[in-house]
Length: 415
Image 1: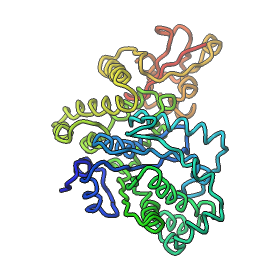
Image 2: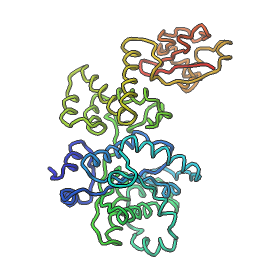
Image 3: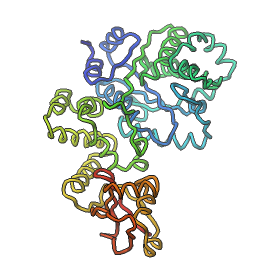
Image 4: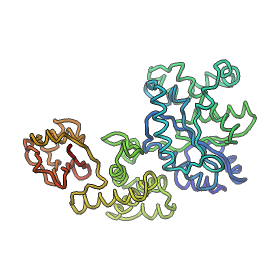
């Protein structure tokens, strides 16, 4: 049992994997509000649900009255985190970094209540200080505190070297810069805790040690587990790719449906990690017998979608799913959409081709296999003939609804 409310709830919800000094952190938390941070590098223009554990950890910290610092890595993005990657990231242009920063900043604001100035959650960009560093200064003042032997022992580095992929000197510096971030945030905001995924453990420990050596202060590190589903799949990955937090990259309907399709064994774990529902309620829902567990999945999907988008968007998605799957209606609200050529429709489109062109399947060949297997539907009617031609006569309410199996749908519009 932990004495501080934040650590106890974090433990109850499954957020704690490793910590540098859990007892010491517990004592510090009891003395009053602390400042803690998690860093997010802009490797894409949106975060995906794999990052949602960290965002929810910040949200939980904020709930318990502590100061949240969301660090966006405009500086470190120019190097790229090599942790557990099979090969080096491609270097991004400043234009790409700026666009990605804007996207992930919006993702963070969706989940955490960021306040500009004053107390509460703040967002900072490490480019503010990293770009001002001279290389000689970094080597003399910071590099002297790092042991190459120790850095080579980090799992994130060893895994790369063991595969004989090599590690560039550029990437090797990443851990030093992340550690410097902790020291800078400690000086600027009194930050005493860095959190992150378990793949960041080596970098976090280095930051804790750097602050101790350079500032003579005790600070702490804590990691959350990197999640996989009960079947072993990586969290946030589907057959279609990553499940993004940005609605432009992953429509709200698809986002809601991702959580609705949670495996039975994961419902309780995901309710605790990804919703604000009380722990006892999460456990009650997870224990629902038989088919009733599907109601718990709907609650999970709606609560997560509410946090990441809005209550209105979540309820719209739930309604669209109910009418699509349970009532068999042609529902337009909430379903993902794609636009194809009206001229092509007027000429007639082979049914297998419209499935491939819509992106619902990857190729004409896959579309043919889907039809032969009985999994393709047009306007909720099973397609029996792969030579069928789709024309304007198939439009319903101005669109054509395509379905792959029971759970994947898209609306095709024409212009």
